[in-house]
Length: 137
Image (cartoon, rainbow, N blue to C red; front, side, top):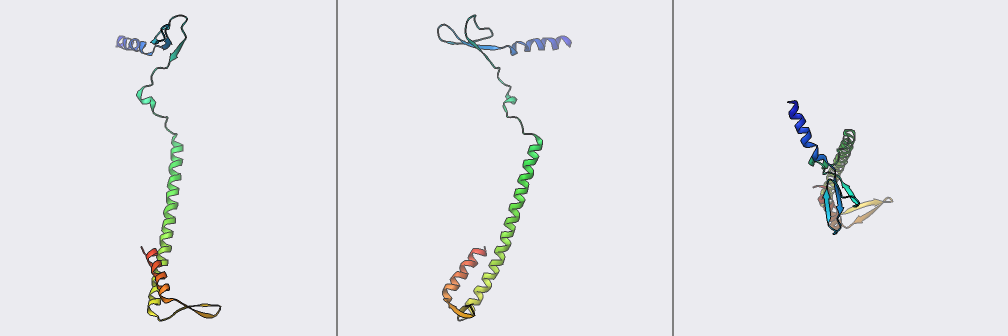
């Protein structure tokens, strides 16, 4: 068993040899384990194993922090949407009530500085219908 491990270890040793790149006298790029004497050579890095090409994983604490932040932002957005929906329901009910009232009366007015100011009934009905369609979805 010990001999088998030694053979495997020796077989893998040449695979880790340094490879060099240089240009020969004819201008062609050459590769090899030993560059010729006097040639300007550059050592090449061995290719990375396929699993090592992935970027390093972010630390767990950073992932947890990002998750909590996104969770908090999502909760705040849901609260904002729920608050907006509740306000729209209240506006819807108010617009429906006002529309029903304006449609049932003959003259529409409001008080300004203690005096009655009459409004165009058809324009007021259109305004209230627009509010109903906007807020009552």
